[in-house]
Amino acid sequence: MTTTWKDTPTKTVDVHGVRYAYRELGPTGGVPVVFLHHLMAVLDDWDPRVVDGLAARHHVIAFDNRGIGATGSTVPADLEHMGADAISFIRALGYDKVDLFGFSLGGAVAQMVALQAPDLVRRIILAGTGPRGGGGIDKMTRIVGLAYLKAILARKDARHFLFFPRTAEGKRAADAYFTRLSERRTDRDKKISLQARRAQLQAIVRGGGSAPDDLSVITAPVLVANGDKDLMVASEHSADLARRLPNAQLTIYPNSGHGGVFQYHHEFVPAALEFLADH
Image (cartoon, rainbow, N blue to C red; front, side, top):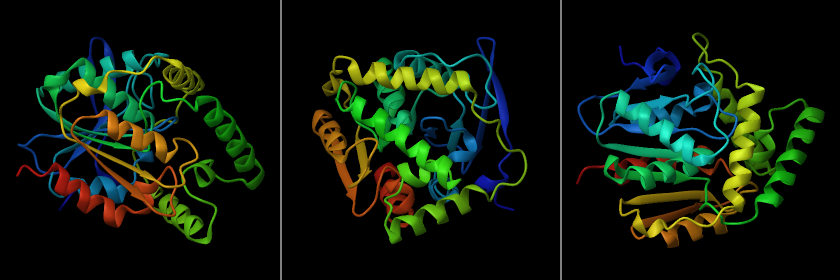
């Protein structure tokens, strides 16, 4: 039987005394695609259609970074250490070359990995993210706070308001996304802790106020994607990110938000497979 994301077992690996939780699926033997997830997310927050779609042709590895979900220790409050932890995890699995798929905060971490260990990275997909020091962080903080207030009042997950536009089309996409997230019934990940939430937010705020990185040194091919109505990371920031990278291509999905790659998974997965293909 073919293993899919909803029934892939959770594994662990010890990295310098920290037990990391991860899941892997897809054909082995090539360059694996390592998934780096978003703010306040754990393994169960990856869209099964995206994971299974990429795993149809690639070895996919998704993990909880330090202090996230079932992984031990505490979350560092800066992007540099998050990137260093991701590098340590990848090397602990024995890989010296990987592709990266970073979504939102994971996209910022993927940039840190590429800057700190350029020889480790072959290709990168950055979705719903922008460059460090890109600005707009204060606006995003207010938007996130308002979304969580709306979520409490509506008794919904805040991602209904943050990832998808509140149009009829966006609401349908949100409902479908959460239905897919609920497909896994057993061996679900631990929920994210309060310490992890606070540290991740601190890292995002620090990153937004930092001096921009010299992204011209990242020579690996990069696919940058976002929705045209992203409330958290405006598509202008994604376009700016693509301009700063010397070997990047940009895709902006219409009538979609921060979760544009999930709303448009039918289009995104083939595009990602084409981008990752070893021509």
